[in-house]
Image (cartoon, rainbow, N blue to C red; front, top):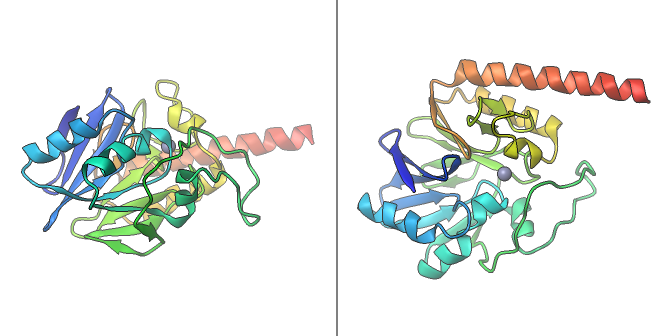
Length: 242
Ligand SMILES: [Zn+2]
């Protein structure tokens, strides 16, 4: 696992080039954002102890396997830490893959493993957890959330954006790293969420796959335009078929 320090408070941990999770420094220890794929618990704890602080809470951007893979092992090793995820994606952890009647009835994509760990806190738009504000960003998954660090406006965006293989909104296929797009549930919602994040005027953008971008505004806007064009193209194609 490779550790990259990006700002004073944000440390990126990378497994296999493109799979990230993050340690966010708080006064009482680290908040771990996402848990990477399975088998990474020891490596994550080692990086935290190298930095000299305990992990005091685990927060999840969404319930895909490459973000919750090491959750159970971490929870076993750190049974007293808070575990937080959106109320909506928490259902996936317990094996409930149903859609709500109010949601677009579109097939779920990507792996949603069942986890033994029960969340201790269910997150909603606007909640605060340490210095982080919860930003609801549905689309990649129904209950996907991003986090805004209120101290420096860093945004930890999960898979709402990717920077691996090119800066893209979740749902736009980047040939060099198509995984997040292939796992995206609803592109229209993902686009709305991408717009919501750029409107926060983030100082940096930290993603599940790829490097952290500083001053990301123009690259995010470009990625949004690409997504808008590709959705418009799809709509034209569909209206031809219909
Ligand atoms: Zn994902």
